[in-house]
Length: 375
Image (cartoon, rainbow, N blue to C red; front, side, top):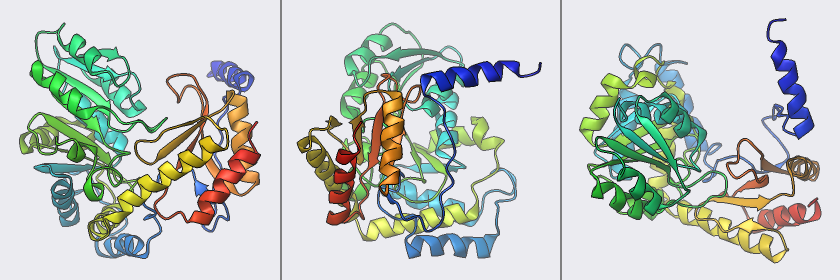
């Protein structure tokens, strides 16, 4: 029977407690949200929503084509200019998603004969970029510059190291300055995904590369998403102008994909301008994360110390994590639930978002619910 193997895989997932389901949320959900990636609380901000509406009224519902045909509007280029300037890079290129941006950066910068050195904890989009690239990939130990240096030393030719800046599972930060030094010893490039750093790390949320003194370097390329701190949708690659020009001509997820919808570009631009005007939101997100961690550990829970706005709480098993998250929902708290294969270490956990707009009462309530529902 066609696709008969699907039933076997579905049964295996059920036995392992790894079945995933969609849960549509209403517009006015009563749940306290610690599951989304809306780190700065901007997704529903009136200025951000109006930025989306104004762009839709001006440019229409869609971009109407690929970026190289009709899909580039004046709004797209305005967003690219301001995003590059904010993060400290020479140029930027906007994509329809952060996933597409990562695929573009890795595949276009790792041609045949090159080496890609990839952190073992990297996001799936970077991993897929490595799989699609024509270069050879070597996976190295997590957040280990010495392992990167060793891998680069085995290769004679073009090379690039690839890493998240903040890892999405536990919220730990990569040693960017040390990674850059390792790459420079061998003339290799460094590509980093700042999806969880933009808006949270660096002065006023300018990002992890900016905080590490790497913004604008001619050997560093950064990818970002517009769907987390900026509360919108889409992604971008930032770096030297010649690298961005190369992506325009070589990145398949740019050339053959429809451009980002104007509404998403408009809301991202509005959020970026709001962040520039209110830079304290970044520090507030970090402070909320530290507060959540301190309270959770004081309650006897095993929480990982956050480097940005992600707080991870270990669960006893995949089934235990699912039940814990469900019990939190029943008590009015929405938390993330990470299980294999989403977690590289095989350890299931709850994943909490430390939003900048959380109140003291909401933080206290979240910790109380998590503690009372623990398996």
